[in-house]
Image (cartoon, rainbow, N blue to C red; front, side):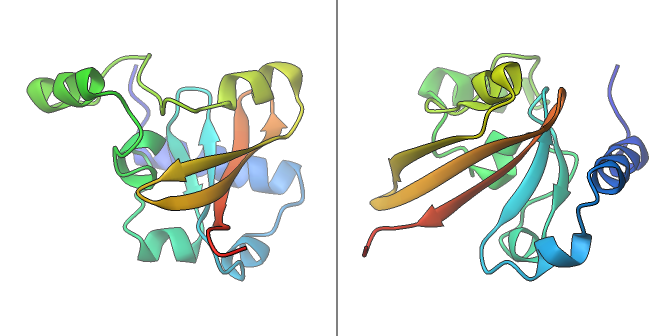
Length: 139
């Protein structure tokens, strides 16, 4: 069953409220930060992410990841179906499942499009996580 944008927004509001996380806090970050559910659907995007055309209600690997880190086969499946595919598509380096399963934050350095990024997956609930990457290319 597909979630509607209203349901996705309610899920984000619930998470932000339950964990006393402030939308304002997310919006002062100078980098894109999102909250994603287990199905890889974006349920919250801060203002910086929105500036980068990240769309709540889409899969993280699509608008947040810009399809840069999914396999060519997955890109083809997505393009041919003209719909968001069923479970299974994720970035090749994704650690979301492990972070959620262990309820432990995970950090990994990944090179994407010539940039070195420090990528974070931080569990919030048993079904969601905070996700962001910081460009550390010049450090």
